[in-house]
Length: 237
Image 1 (cartoon, one colour):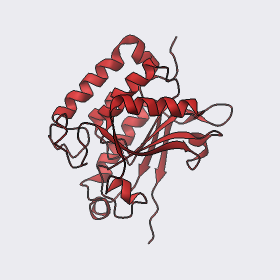
Image 2 (cartoon, one colour; image 1 turned 30 degrees about the horizontal axis):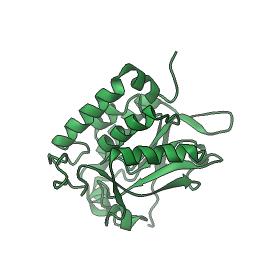
Image 3 (cartoon, one colour; image 1 turned 180 degrees about the vertical axis):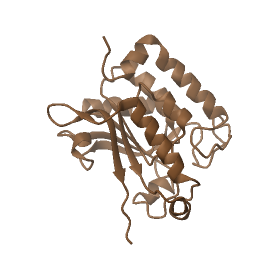
Image 4 (spheres, helix red, strand yellow; image 1 turned 90 degrees about the vertical axis):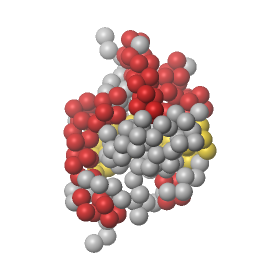
């Protein structure tokens, strides 16, 4: 009988630990996101396009009541805001976090404790905001957190500029994908977010997310338990 959240099945089979090892190997020649920097981020002095090295940087974390109801529910979504980003959106509402990197470095043990603290506060899920450039670090922390009793689902809250190889590492780990689809015009992606081929990358990424988790499913309270929720960006003019 399968367990929920899904990552418990991979943990019990030993697959979660293998995913961590594979993710860290990808960090050695960084191809975590579509920029494919090739930098050895295991050496903390070396950073890729995202400006992050060996350890994740976290700006803040708290029970967030500002997300869509299926995500926030009644007790909030346990949101972790990761600093820096693999995009450079000129209109970013969290400019100090995504561009300037305000926050503190967290080793896997620290990040695991954050997850457990949010669970202890009664959050419905762990909501990873802007995780695309720090997936290996997240998986390292998740393994530790599960060993210490983490039992709430993972929300992958992304701008959808994600690598297919990285997303496949998350198959069976993430139960809920919260994907922003920003543009279907690659020139807009280049102009406003400084990335190439955003539409094609995002569409393939969202297809992979859907393959993994399917349509959004909620419980009797209306709170998401599994599936994909896509949000569309609206800009002036």
